[in-house]
Length: 199
Image 1 (cartoon, helix red, strand yellow):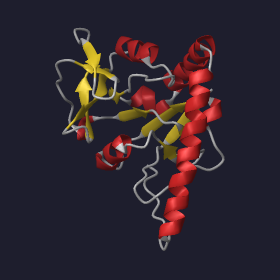
Image 2: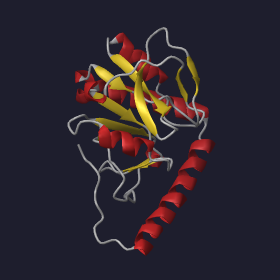
Image 3: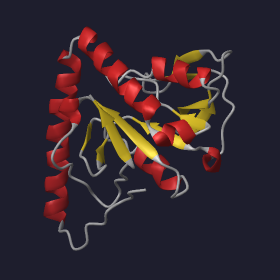
Image 4: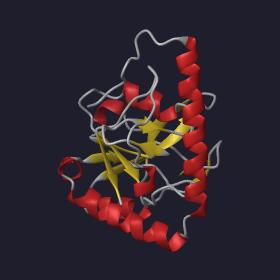
């Protein structure tokens, strides 16, 4: 798995510059997500779903952590249903510990969802999977590059989560084509994904 890339010798001014660049990228991508027509979002999400279902890593995985789409992200509901039909065990992230970390909560047919601390849907009653038991983590992001570098929403949840899973556990980012950049600016705390699927 591609992991954090340490930026040795970076000055405080360079780190600040990286932060400002990230802020600008987030603003632009959030605006594009907001303006994208729902019809286009749905069509592209279905194309990405087909790519995921054909992916060898997904086919091999028995226990998959998906995210529940939020504010214009690639929609995962049909992916989750397809994965269930294939007999896979599904988990989704739940925000815990004073809103600082994520845990993979089982999502079964009886699960009821509620809005979490930041408005993201999550199971009401949570039974958790151990991190070591995950075979694949399907990851959201605001921007990615083709090396797997990822830009999130700025809270660091997925960076912390991905840094804790076993090194051999793959992660797949999902994105629309306008979210794929030539280069995503990174810091020592950023964690990249194994691959990115987009449409």
